[in-house]
Structures are given as C-alpha cells and as structure tokens.
Length: 147
Image (cartoon, rainbow, N blue to C red):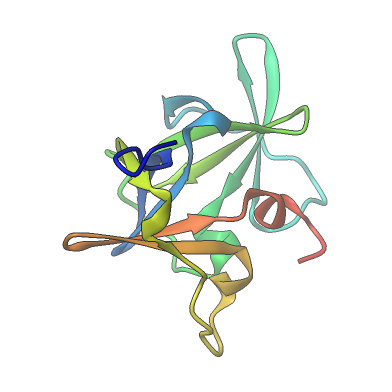
C-alpha cells in the first residue's frame, strides 16, 4: 500500500437521539422499515421480540433500550438494521439510518473513558470526520447478554 492509499472502513451511519453511530457495512444485511414485532416472554427488556423476515425468524434489539437512552415515539423514521455476526442474524431498532460512508481508519480513535455512561462498554472507537463525530459500535459486546 503506497502513501496515497489509505485503509478505508465502509460503515452505515445511524441515529439514536442526538448521536450518530456506525457499524461496519460488512455486517449489515439490510435496512427495513419498522414492522410488527412479536414479543417473546422472559427475554431481556431491550429484546423487543422477533420478526419473520423473508422466512427467517430474526431477534430484534432496541438499541435505545440497550444503551439506557429514553425510548422515542417517532416511528416515521425508525428503521431496523439487520446485521450478521458469527452465523447470527439480529435486527437493531434505530431512530433512523442515515447513509453509508467511508471512514479513513486513521481517523478512528479509541473510545474516550466516560464515567457513568451505559454505552461506553459497547463502543469500539470514535471517528472524527470534519464536523461529525461517529461512535463505532463493538457488535459482539452489544449482542452479549451478560453485559
């Protein structure tokens, strides 16, 4: 790789409240409008239930609930981002899915140490792009029920 080429990470950017988050596009299977979610008894509060997506039963996680952010009622822009990791498919409920962008890997910094933040355990890094700050999620930790 010569000096002109930079390592690029393609991510999908989504909104939760007033913050922008990003997950690698390589993990994203698709983005769906909010649909009927069937509740599953005795699951964690942030697990909204399951959906039948093209014949595949997919668990749905509300990221606002998972991160301890007050739940929003604005369902107009709400989306479900379908992601896969290690043979597992799951949907994340987000306020809106904004765009797909390229982030230079060199612009990604380790997550800041924030005391008292619920979401800090789920962050793999922060990318600074011009006037935007993108929070990169650590998918394995978001999906780990022990955390």
